[in-house]
Length: 186
Image (cartoon, rainbow, N blue to C red):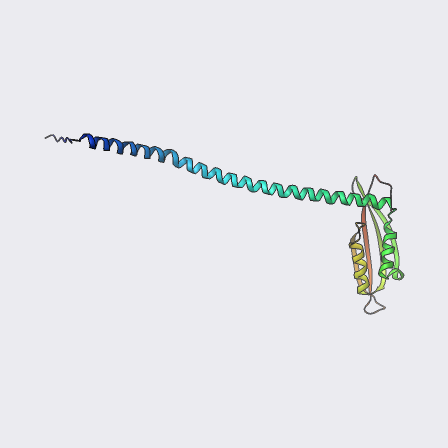
């Protein structure tokens, strides 16, 4: 026994079947081609966003670099100006001690120098001050740290004065950098 089916399709149904087959093939082609393309577009959009973020970070770093360059140029100018005015760290520290009202309590003031790099040398001064009030200490330290002469405190030792209650004995070292190729102004 052989089974055979024959379906009679009219011209109108044939057109509908052909159109359905074409649409089915088109849908399969679209799914096979468009879906990976859309995934690739999404991947590229994420890559573009990452690159834009990197670009913004690069711009931020560039601005920071320019800011550091401007600060360095200002520091170099201050160093040059300071040397031209005959800058001497011991005399500057003595002036600050006088302005803070502790010049009479300064027991010693010793200048020092050390090489720092090929471009700069370090100039310092160590001093010991006895019997000053906490307010005088704060005023003196503030004058040093806020000085336009680029002074910094390397070490600071504070002890209670043994002979005077409420008074302090301090030992500190203040330093700055001076360009090597300039005339020595220590």
